[in-house]
Image: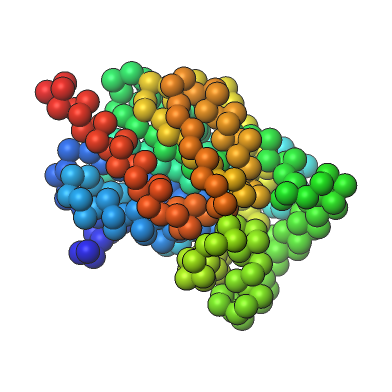
Length: 325
């Protein structure tokens, strides 16, 4: 596969968003991939390589603000209640991410049909965009297809990680306490995390338990650890309140004008399959796929499943464009 072409998109507050482009620049359909919390464009590598090789789609994947090679921007302001902002300091909002995705579309995809794919926080980003610019998703609108994988429209503050509530409640308190410490001294946290192994047996076992299924390839887990390790600690802690207060259920109906695939993993501890079922029920015409035995990082654990669903959406978008010509 040829090396990607790089672009920089400037968001409304001056944040510089790193974008990688694969595939034919003049392809009839553009696919835009939005990654999740603490990740980067690398999380979509398998899909970008497989789909760009087909030659009939232009693939754009970008680093969310504060992740990878994208900057935080001047408005690193929290869109969460003051109590949470006070605990974690200034941070971003999911609505801000929706605006960033709009900037990517406006500056790099000014015309032609688009398929959007979002994993975890990336799916929430698409929901925020639909809330802000519903006309994009209307029947016959620019966005012809949407894939939402391992994501949620809200209610994440009640996360259990698969534990009974009597255990989950103190675990949540411990997570918040740890993230508050990270937010207070992100530089110290960065130095500590830089020394941690991404491939040691314990590191792999911990990530397998939290983010993958039991049979996930070890190489995928190590790569995931490497990606997360590069995420700045300020970003790791800064996004947490926004995710916990994310609520976009009222925006879901707007997605119904596009072809929508909702994907879940049966062993997802962060966004359990119940969240995907609620999405599929709320989005008119959405199709639900639950992949047995897999965890939260489905695009890396079972890349071919996600690529196959994206191929279907791309083909449908291309057919729609040809019929309208």
